[in-house]
Every structure is written in C-alpha cells, then in structure tokens.
Amino acid sequence: MLAVKIIIGGLLLFMIVNLFFAMKVMLKNDQSVPMSRFIGRRVLASAVIVILMLLAIATGLITPNPRPY
Image 1 (cartoon, rainbow, N blue to C red):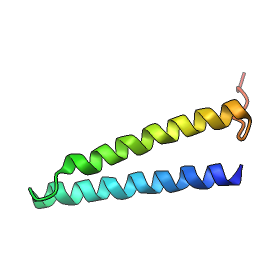
Image 2: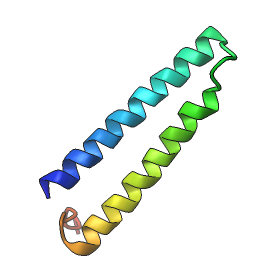
Image 3: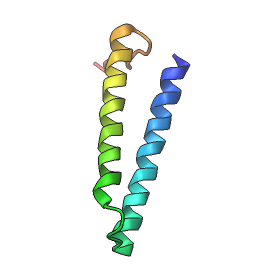
Image 4: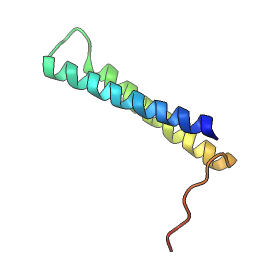
C-alpha cells in the first residue's frame, strides 16, 4: 500500500518537474528541445497515475473516502 502511494507521489513530482522544464523552454524560445516532449511526458505520467489508481482501488490496495451523503 505504501509503495503505491510513493509511486503516485513520485509520478506527481515528475509531472511538476516536466511542467517547469516546458515553461523554461517556452520562455527562452529555445528551438533545440521541443516543448511538446515535456508536455507529452506530463500527459503520459498523468495517464499512468490514473491507471495505477484504478488498479489499486480495484485490487483493494487503497480505499477511497466514503461518500459524504
């Protein structure tokens, strides 16, 4: 259970780092490294996070909060 949470936290941190790298490329107007590379990595990481969370909920590794009503 703890490993799943650490992996999700690491992927979230990876997303934030790639967002800042894309911002740096955008502000410098640097054409050597395409900004889409960093944005694509961010989208891929978010897809992996969603799939990992769905699998963890389905297998019972993590439990979502109960409904408020």
